[in-house]
Length: 272
Image (cartoon, rainbow, N blue to C red; front, side, top):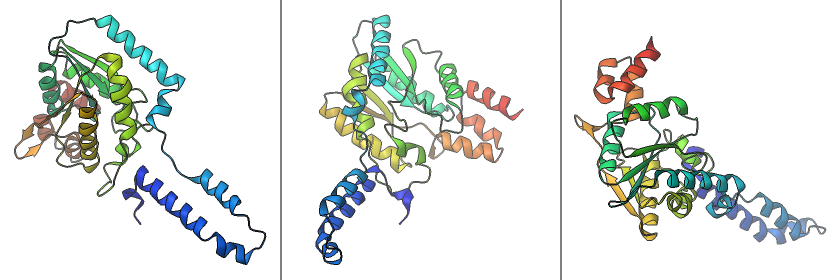
């Protein structure tokens, strides 16, 4: 078995199957060992069951409640009049490209206020601090955007660990319910968000599953889910992974075609 194809849901299913097999074979073990007590294995295996931390459990923690207070304070400090509503977009920007800029510009035009959550987990090639600054530089011409760190509750190792191994994933089935549930049930209401924007995902199976699940869940909660066709150069969508590939090949001329000036200047400074 290829462990890269096994997400949290698959792991839990396997654990439960093993548990059931062990219990069903208790009679055979009792024949071999008259002193065997089935309750022993029940306790051991029950303790070993692998369960992902659910969104409602996380929501009760002090850390998450402080995060909600932080968001509520931001909402109160902005105090805008709403006509088109408040939207959100979550980005990693590893690094920030013209594709990201296009998605954000499109989303910002559809709402009165757009929150941009930048993935804070430092598991990308470019650090969170640098990615945050690149997003700020690439969106400074947009007056109705507010850029926020995602904290530990939006696309993080706590809520969506499979996201960070997606480069290796092929046919993996992932569990995104915790991440989407926390956003829809707690984070969005704290900021008055009614619209979530995403880019179409033609290549990454993990992100595509995330978008598909989120679409269904948000619509059930009465929120709008807007999927934006990704900007293309030639016949291919612009992507941060493409930028990284070009950088590895030192093809800086092609990089310059798919990143804004601010990102290009940052990348050139790294090269020097």
